[in-house]
Length: 160
Picture (tube, rainbow, N blue to C red):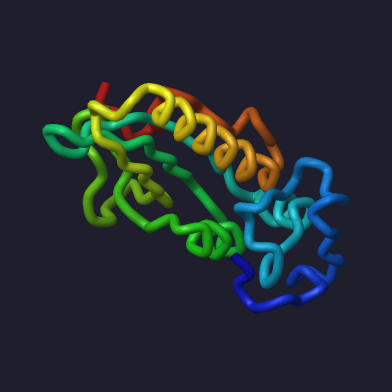
């Protein structure tokens, strides 16, 4: 999933470590060239209160999706999210009201769809993949795993 080929350096100038030498701050899912390393991304993100929300939503009568929504990202992190397949959308309101076109509360959103009658072991495997991606993203944020919220929606976006 290399964005710019087999570069040996991140865009911040730090060397790209072989996967065997990486200590939990990158994975096979992360683009490894063309972007800041996790430590430099953390420094770039200190000015932003970025959070990652992981939810499950009903998308259609027989379809559901695990959804990752990332709020308040800086430009470097936004580029990284786009390379990982996130789209710039409106924040979700709840489990039954998925996001729409970008409005007043934009987020970076990624959906993982599945049929609601899918065998449980496939759903559990998908849940593990979603959790791994959420924690991968957290490695690039200054507040780390404290930025990850499961089964929660951004408070500013929820009607009270």
